[in-house]
View 1: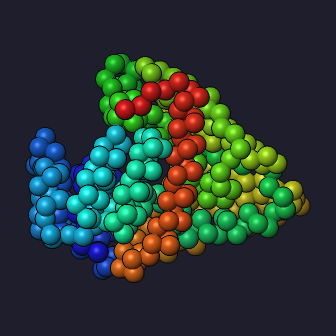
View 2 (view 1 turned 30 degrees about the horizontal axis):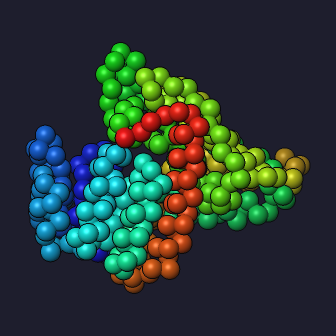
Length: 325
């Protein structure tokens, strides 16, 4: 994979160090804003990237890469991904895929029409521990209750309360607790159960954005609560309860640090099957193979998953009366 990284923010700075462990990826270009040009060029030099850009259209004219990693702020995902697909590039897009379900459908149609790879970079779906969690969940009887709590006091929340609206809390930029952290909970649950029958979102709204909230997903016999908070915090963990035991996911749902199984008799076993210490390694290793093999079957399957997530997100946003973008 010859890759262009679109963005130079926190997630990009987290991603670039693992390139040395992914020989199938060559980072050929990086894009940043004019305001962040110095930072972008520093990353270019540090990681031996051939080209640096501040203009997306100029960047996409390059033949040096075949794939782009869209890692810009949430509200730019759709526009940048669409431009990349129109330029004939494969697209790996950070979560949330888009702000609206219709936007994802548009990207899907464009990608499939042109036989291009389009996938969402959502860590938990590809972690080895997640495969273990899925298998363990099949061995605890009939599932009844799932509770996911990803609550982490944001370093930007104090500034937000004082009136400084940074992207993480900006509704125009697709911010908020649901889009930022609760979406990992949604992906985990959709990977286990698929599409719910009913969606409700009870959000704490400040300055027109959800700073925390409880998302209720009704799967008939299984009831799910997904909690995401940026204005408070608690022990971060998730619990999957069945008639014959439970599975406890230790740590945030974007990392799945480890998981434990507990029987009705109280016997607890803890597992950790990580292939690599970095949470983004597994997904990009697989994406490299998908692009190399032009695995459109995989792409279509994952797009179905992402579309369910976007339907849930859109229903929740509408339920809470939040206006994004």
